Amino acid sequence: MQKKSRIQFTSVKIEDLMFRTTFDPRTREGDLIVNLSLINSKDYDDVIKIFSMAMNSGLTVSPMIKVLHEGDKFGEMTIGKDEVGFATVCSITIDGVLLKAGVMIKPKFGGLVEIRDGLPVRFTNVLTYQSTTIDPLEVLMSQELTSVMEMLRTGTGKILANLREAPMIARDIIDSTLSDMVDAGITGILEVGEPNTRILDVPVERDHLGIVVIGGTNPMAIVQEHGIPIRTNAMSTLMSFSEMKHIREL
Image (cartoon, rainbow, N blue to C red; front, side, top):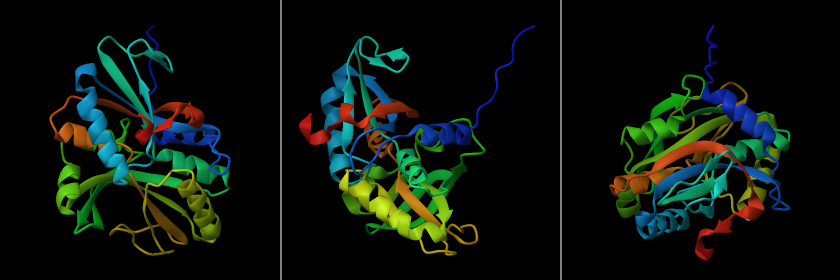
């Protein structure tokens, strides 16, 4: 009798990674969650310029990155012939750090945020983590719905972001922890809402507040918008912060 494989929704994977996150923003030590992107090595120079532009513009979770070359090991996989891999910080790292600080954080969905004249206006397309087995931002990227480069040029466009909710009673801990993360280079907070108040046109649960974080895959979306082939596996695995470098150091 053939063994049936179990379907794992993204929400389950997120919970697992959150609990395994050990990154401490004060000591800047421990493991954080990373995305893995793969490109053809011939596109390296173009892609690294795009990544640098996006990260220096604040359009990602962190400017920290690890470059993987042919033959390098990454978890259970090996970077293939003529490939280059990029490990970048995933936004769910923020949820893991908040959880370790004692905040009962609830990642809700990933989606597109409309930016108008440089200001976030509202979520448009969204996918909840409980409704899909694929990361929502990967799905939205595959549909070519982003206009991240246009937003950088004109101040208006659609970028990738995600929403989580937290109890309003934890507001002081949230503010303190997010401040520590900013000091450590985890700077992807787009907006923190007020308790019992809609955030970017999305309602939140009673006695909760919403936190919107810029998607860690926005640099990859720009690469795709330039017509350069790129494969991204969001929330790929955990990596020690000590293995990563600032994009300026490459």
